[in-house]
Length: 312
Image (cartoon, rainbow, N blue to C red; front, side):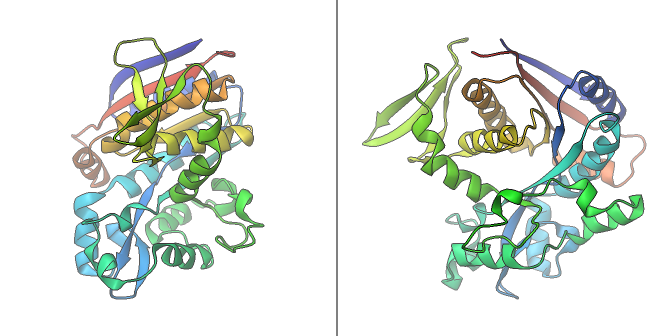
């Protein structure tokens, strides 16, 4: 049976109390998606760089990153590290670093890249083929807490033997574009059970998900025939389930909250195994105040807790 619990939690301590209780009822290893960041083309060095404004030398890129991503990457990475200790009593718990490596090529979003004439795939490969480098802001936090990279992050070993050399050996980044590609090539052809169907409009076929529980429960998993945000989430959860990680905590951007939760629900119905996923979001302005150390301020977290007990 599928269940979802929706609530608002005021302040980090209330969030951690809730997650501690959730973790105590978790029978499997735990994956924590935190510190998620986007890539942007830096025309000064002709490379993709993480949109973490605290680490960027190009002033214009740093300003854009601050406006778009804000303090979400650094703040949620900090939360993820705290949850790592909170939830690791009797379970193997790892952080999962997911990289948005496709938005930079969107029309009208990164004009410097579009004007460069460079190939998006080539830029992605160059970013990932370099020896693994954790963003400096993240590395500083690990050093303060005396934590080792190998013990903190889930290794993306699925790509180690990639003949194209897309990733270096022992990578710790997970590519959103890779999830989207796998969904498009493989997973969407298997979405044939009673909860998924095709819908054609203007000669464009889209894959829809409907749990048939409520009137407005239908979700589109593709955009213009290609994998959308919800489809990408399905692919990520399939990957984690294949690695026997059935309990996942995800810190996601506020603007992605709805699509992410829709993807989680569709994934649970597709995977059909006992699985628990908690999705947490908040506003960037709240995160900035918390990161600045405002002791009189509490972040308002929106939390969706999904669970599936047994087969559907």
